Amino acid sequence: MNHPSSKSQNQEIDRRRTFGIISHPDAGKTTLTEKMLLFGGAIQMAGSVKARKASRHATSDWMAIERERGISVTSSVMKFDYRNFEINLLDTPGHQDFSEDTYRVLTAVDSAVMVIDSVKGVEAQTRKLMAVCRMRNTPILTFVNKLDREGMPPLDILGDIEETLQIECAPLSWPIGMGKRFKGTYNIHRRELTLFTPGRERLPDDSVTIRDLGDPILDEILGRQADELREDVALLEGAANPFDLQDFLKGSQTPVFFGSAVNNFGVRELLDTFVEIAPGPLPRQATTRTVFPGEEPFSGFVFKIQANMDPAHRDRLAFLRVCSGRFQKGMRVRHHRIDKDILIANPIMFMAQDRTAVEEAWPGDIIGIHNHGTIKIGDTFSEKEPLSFTGIPNFAPEHFRRVQLKSPLKSKQLRKGLTQLVEEGAVQLFRPLMGSDLILGAVGILQFDVTMARLKAEYGVDAVYEHVDYVASRWVKCDDPKRLSAFERANQAHLALDAEGNLTFLADGEWRIEFVAEQWPEVVFTKTREHR
Ligand code: G4P
Image (cartoon, rainbow, N blue to C red; front, side):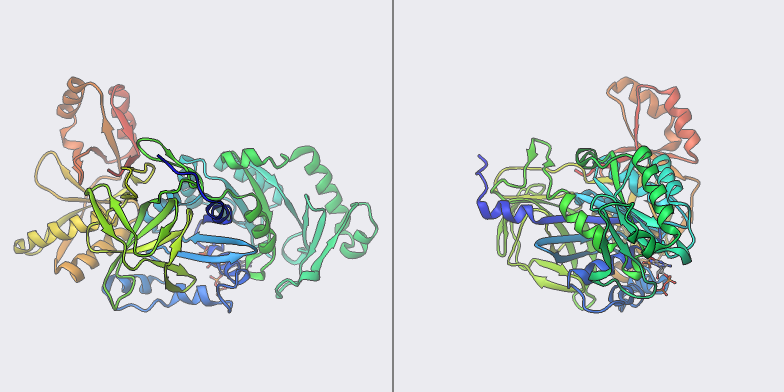
């Protein structure tokens, strides 16, 4: 029986917003994050997040990789308040060499903000991240950044987003000029003009309410650009899609804002609209039923495991998203996969740069649990009722390496290390049906460097990582056992078992997958696979 939720639980749920920022590297995700944290009072000084991005102190080898490349290998969680809302911002690593972590973080959010560089338009990584958002129809708000630079005409940017990402755009603000002529934005809904002064952060009195675009005050303020704005707005009224909340919530329409994150311009408009229209904690699907956030019993799932976050402790931290009920410190919960009750002793939360002890947490919140090897990605914790949340997938790797030990004496350590790293979701492991190779698979190539460094530092394993000819993979299934055996016989050289024993097709090109799939129509090829 699920108990009805209390009034305070509903209030807590209503004021939670859990989201991630998706963008291609350099579009301005870090800058936007920082401005949001500044508004939320979570950090005091501009530059804090950037500084952290550049100079993480490292005492273990794989953190040194992170430092060397000046990027964040692992993603983290930042909690901040804005107005009366508690916002959980889940950071997705922004570098080109992103990993499965980047994808998986998006399975734990209720909405996303997409940052587009106005000079470059939609870029490769945004496309990939958008495909992941689409799996759960995550609502997306768009922020077109860097309007202080000479970029693509705004209408072309909208066209690019609609065409490349197959999502309808509904501009809620409109830029007035760009680059040197960038004067500000006009909020179409509120009929408000916000003026831009380069090199300075916005002040509250920079906004002017314009009831009628015909008002001569507009000419006074904008000069010749007043008519350009009038024409643009007239054009938009005829051509642009009006904002539709339901379409946004279904993930089929994205409201679009324009601004300049580095100048803190347009960020407040984005945040104000975000807290108003972005959904609070959404119901989540478990294998047996849908779980609603307002249910009284606590439940949550692990979407990420991070090792050695605190070099002094060399601990592993499991990130759990609360899905229903109230989490309280010292709570005993059921760990369903291993069928045991466990005590969550010292859970932590993440405030901008700090970790703090958790007393209680509500749906939408993310808590960190110390993990001594019993927690895997995708694990569900709840009170009594056996639940297993779905939608926390593995993604088909695109990069592969064969592991060869330098010393055969270390094979036990290698097995142990790989088991651990696979459970953490750091890398995937495949054993080809023919031969005795161990093939590592990753979504981002940097995952191999991390795996290598960690195997050496934590398990004392020295190994060589050889190139193999695979570049794509799919999990395969077939309901007809006879056809499956025939398929296996015919394609042995390309088949492997993953760490959980699932049959996987490893290919030297997408073309081969298409070719084989055509020959075997009853075999299903999938790019994602649920954790068990
Ligand atoms: P990322 O996390 O998406 O990778 O991007 P990040 O915020 O680090 O921004 C990438 C670069 O773009 C930075 O420049 C940043 O200052 C710049 N940037 C962000 N927003 C704007 C904007 O609105 N206008 C302009 N013109 N630039 C912007 P950088 O040279 O790499 O770093 P920095 O030395 O400026 O900090």
